[in-house]
Image (cartoon, rainbow over all chains, first blue to last red; front, side, top):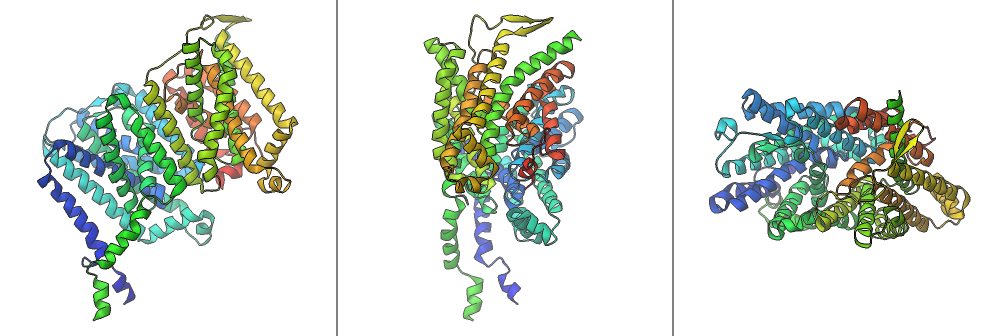
Length: 339
Length: 294
């Protein structure tokens, strides 16, 4: 009986508020037609998806990866090469890219899981660099540092479109997908295992949790979505090069949004992206090229402030207000109590 | 055979600078138990400082050491007070992100102030070479190597024989016991961090005549320093010194015999293998292993 009342059904505000929010996002393109704003929204969803994917291993499991651009880049390169050289549709490429990123992540991470804290982070940086260097090196397959141009042939089968609206929906659905998977993980047995191993790995092992196995699951899911986001990037930008998709700045950005938003929470990375992506786009467009780098410097300052003053992230600020809001909304539970 | 020795010597020369950078990193880690992800950015700042002193005031990069080192020491103190001190007892995750944030700030401020251009100094001795038996050695590399060795030895002497040095080492061995013996731990942290950044101050000035400076130059040298520090055993200064020379040689040999564009990949792979199979480092220091695994 108790579990039944705790269960979130569509009439409980815990569920319908986020659903309403997502529905609202679906309706935005009907009102806003300006390509600049649509492009910004696409970037927000894109980074929210990537940061949420990072958060599964970095936040839930506390294994800080600063090499996630490797999985993102593997996804981008896999589908782009399959499409350009073999004419295989990016839809299939997407699956291939995601799966390849997942397999590489499993192979790379499993031995490194015995390293703790900053040492795990160091190994992810090193792997990220090795992948970037190898992709630049094998020019015959990847075109090397010159980059890979994806020829523009619009069509749903090619996952390329003339306008920005289809990309908007693709990015939105991708973000929702990652958020829903994150939510599912966070309330599942696996989510609790990940939290326990994050807080105290020996303790988790002592009560019989196979910590390596669950970290492995977490990194595979995380890399799969990072790979898919990479495919989206290749189809949207239509040009990929090792220095951009495998850059350490990319890896840092995924992590940054999570930590500023609120690491280890489902909403954190999304909040992080909704704040940071428009901020950086705004700074870039208003300050222009002469202020190159300034937005990343501001990111850095924000990161330090968040780490020192509110290590749980910005999401903590909203949490109380959000919960108070939920209390005031029509609530199934309360109705039951009354009747 | 001569070619091999030539490669070997040029690797060792290069390694001297790596050693110097890594000694700073391992000192900070050994004493504060913080991995400074912004270490390379301090090097970048030192290089820019040396570059601008040359460009604007026509001060030779080697002479600039006497200005760059105190400046970096000061910068170390300031960043320790503002950023490192508040997170000294925070969980490792927060410490990683605080120093990553610091590196983002430095790197992008440099990009903002000085653009992404590659800059270098022009000196009369830049292309000079010295005959060392049958081998040719580039003069600035030779000087960099010798100064790096002298500074490292001086540093070891300082740690072994002065009160501050002994206090620093005692903290590295046992923080609580050192505190009980009346050592001002928080002051020592400040000194350790500032000494670590002063080390890269020397390295930055020495690098200027042989290398370019650009805003992300620190990433390359910073990551290399991590490789060296892990090879040498975390917190082990002698290890860092030898590790630096070793990485210089590995880089030089793989650059010539494998492929110049893969030399970094080679030592990253070595790095990962050492992390996985011998986390205490190649020169074995008791306790270093636990640092990585616990």
